[in-house]
Amino acid sequence: MRIENDIKLDFKDVLIRPKRSTLKSRSQVTLARTFTFKHSPQTWTGVPIAIANMDTTGTFEIAAAASKHQLLTCMHKHYTLDQWTTFARESPDAIGYVAASCGSSVNDFNAIKDILAAIPEIKFICLDVANGYSEFFVDCVKRTREAFPNHIIIAGNVVTCEMTEELILSGADVVKVSARSGRAFKRRIQNTPIRPPCFMAPACSRRLPLWFAPPSLLFTPCLWPSFLTRACDPQVGIGPGSVCTTRKQTGVGYPQLSAVIECADAAHGLGGHVVSDGGCTCPGDFSKAFGAGGDFVMTGGMFAGHDESGGELVEKEDGSKCKLFYGMSSATAMEKHAGGVAEYRSSEGKTVSVPYRGPVSNTIMDILGGMRSSCTYVGASTLKEISKRTTFIRVTQQLNHVFGTADMRQPGMPAKK
Ligand code: 5GP
Image (cartoon, rainbow, N blue to C red; front, side):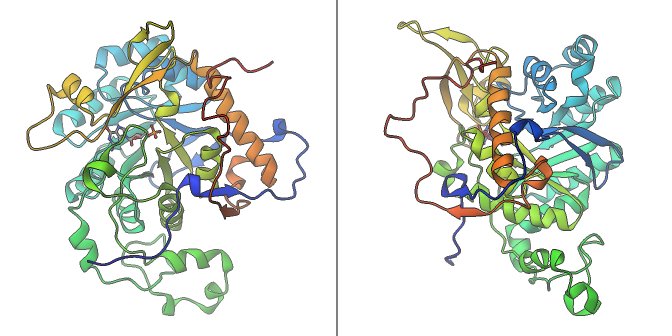
C-alpha cells in the first residue's frame, strides 16, 4: 500500500483566470476546429463537443439536432442496421457528425462492420468498454484499426498517461479519458520500469531517452512539459459521470481535470488526441476541460431530459414533466439490453429523473455561448487556443448557492434573440 500526496483536481476545484484580450465580442470566437488524426487519413471539422453514446443521449433525434450546430453525437450501440440506414437516408447532412459505437464483443464488431459497410460516410468509430485497461481491449483496438484503417477511432476509457499512449500506439486516434476502468493492466504497468523522459515521442513506445537528445532539442521549451510528465505513475481511475456509481461501488477514482491534463499531454506527445468524458455540470466545465488540454469534451447528463433525448416523458402529479436518465451500467440499462444484472457483478450506474428541458438546441446554444465567453475572457479567438491561454487558479468555492442551486431559467429555455 502506498499513499500519493500529489493533489489531483476536479472541475469544481479551479476557475480560469481572465487575461487581457483583444477580442471585442463573443461573436469573434470560432468554436469549430479542423482536426487531422494520428492514424486516420480523414479530417473532421466541427465543434468538438461529443454527446455520450448512452441510449438516452446518443439518439438519432439528438444527432439530427446537434449536427446543425456541428456537434458530434456518439450513437448508442443498440440501433439496428435498418434504423441506421433509415437515419442515413432521412438525415444525410447529419451523418458526418456521428460516431458508430461498439464494445469489445464479436457481436458488436460484426454489427459495426455491417453499419460501416452500409453507410461509408460515417467517419467515427467509438470503441467503448468499461475497462480500458484490459489487454483484451488493447487487442480489440488493434483489430479495429486493422479492419478500418480509414476511420477515426475513439477508444477508452482510461485516466493515465501510460494507457493513453498504449491505446494511441495500438491504433486509437482519440483516447477517451475518465474511466469506469479496471485493473487487468495494473500489474504490468507497475512492473514496467519508469522510462526515462523521451525526446522522440512520435516514434514508438521504445523511444530514445533524453540523454540521447541533440542539445538543440533540450533547449526547445515547448517540449519540456512532455519530458517532465512522461513518467507518470500508473493509476486506475473512475469517471465522474453524473449517473456513475463506480466510485461508490469500488472506492476507485481519479479527478477529471487532472486526468485530462495528464492524458492530453501524453496523447499530444504522440500526435494523438483526447476526449474528456463526463463530469461536466455547467457550460463553464466544458471550457475548463478544453483549457486543460482536452481536444473533445463528451457529456451525457447535460443532454438528458430534452425532446430529442431517449426515455419516456412523464408528467408528475404537480404538473411538472421529467424524463428518465440512467447509466449504461445501471440496473435499468442492463435489464433493457442484457436481460438483467448478472449475478457476479453489481450495477455501477444509477437511474434518475431529470426535469424536462425542451428542445436540445437551446441547451447547445447555452453551452456554446458560455464557451465563447470563456474564450473572450482569456483572449482566445479560436477554441484551439484556449488551452495555451488558460491559467487555472485553485479555489475553495466556485459558485454562490445563496439562492440554492435552482436556475429559474431552465437550461433548455429559449435564448433571447
Ligand atoms: P456525464 O456527462 O453524464 O457526467 O457523464 C457521461 C459519461 O458517464 C459517459 O460518457 C460514460 O463514460 C459514463 N457512464 C455512462 N453510464 C455509466 C454507468 O452506468 N456507470 C459508469 N461508471 N459510468 C457511466
